[in-house]
Length: 515
Picture 1 (cartoon, helix red, strand yellow):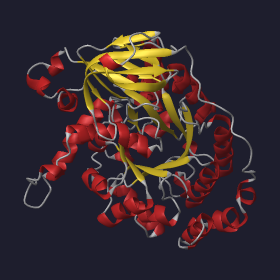
Picture 2 (tube, one colour):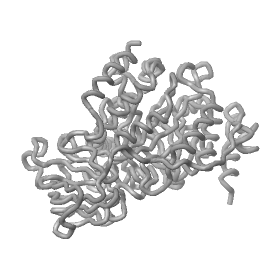
Picture 3 (tube, one colour):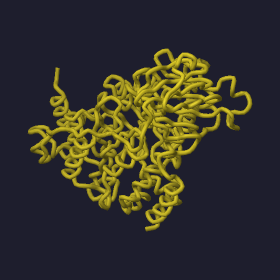
Picture 4 (cartoon, one colour):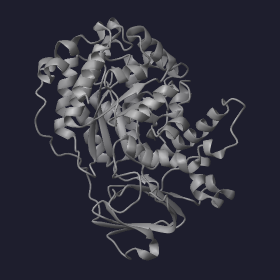
């Protein structure tokens, strides 16, 4: 059996020489010190705390229906939770739970669900929502418009955008967020994002993303938006050692996430994977989002995007890809065999006319699929329930392309509960977490509730209130609890001054857009 190092060496040797120069000269052959000047050793700093106090105990009771997403997929009428120190201790009918706690949430006429897990986002893009020149065009045209704007971002601008984005997500029931930040202009650092997420109180997977292949070297981004690879790798090591928390219940984890095949070199992909596996952190990149990307990798490497990832050693249970729209059956089988996951971003894929990801095929093959809202400039919204609804609808639209029309076998029709499963358990699996995604004893106290007495549910929806959460118009969370702390209460974010932050973000956005 080959070791991982042998596999990566063979992967590198299968690529054209110009794609593997650094790796062959140093990194794979002699280890990380020779290639980067780094010593891949040291201790990780403990991280993952957030501002504010949580109650030692919390009782959540009287939910009309509690959706557990446990192994039996139980839906418990008049259900509730008993929580101690941010961990669920009891799950069941309210009559079987303790009667008191330091904080009590009475959820009569509410649905209670596990917190939603967002597996792909670019929070800084809240600064460039609905930019006129980027409204109508595919992903490459869209990027070319926005790159120069993003190059103007200042650290405080990014922090404001992250506050707005995390608040919007929490208000939609999202409790765990993966953010891919791959531009760091004007002194921006990943530390600012991590600190901001801690202040808001959201469980945060922060990526040290990167772009190194500028236009002068055949890449898509302008040279002003890329970084030197040694500097990228030094900062990747620094943020892992400073911030990554591998413990169960961690509030902060680090991911290494080179942006895309058309914005980084094969060398950086290989070295990022080597570093991530040394530190046991996960890997993420955009993949097969558009036909433009496929043309690029075929011209540069003679390979389709998914095959390129396999040759680079970028496959395994520690890897997940954003979008993965233009993937064939053999590549789906490869994902399943190697354990790669997928972040499905239906709204963004429709907005940029990227295509329809084969979600049903992924699930049939055993590929882990989670939901991502993607950036606020390619979705223009950050509503996880809205994303679950679009995932349901887009999967059904894809059935119309079946030879002979939509199948009569209902098993091929993505159901509302399956969409919610993708948004919870699916996302947790993609991020490599077994401590979130369901409401079970021993898991993190991450949940949200929506009120049923509102116009979106009026009429016959109460014949199946759980399905109505996906089929009916998306609604705002009444309560969102993260790590046992109430972040949204009665439909309002509690951990920041949202009107003030929105006003500041609007001013920053106008400056970033207009220069």
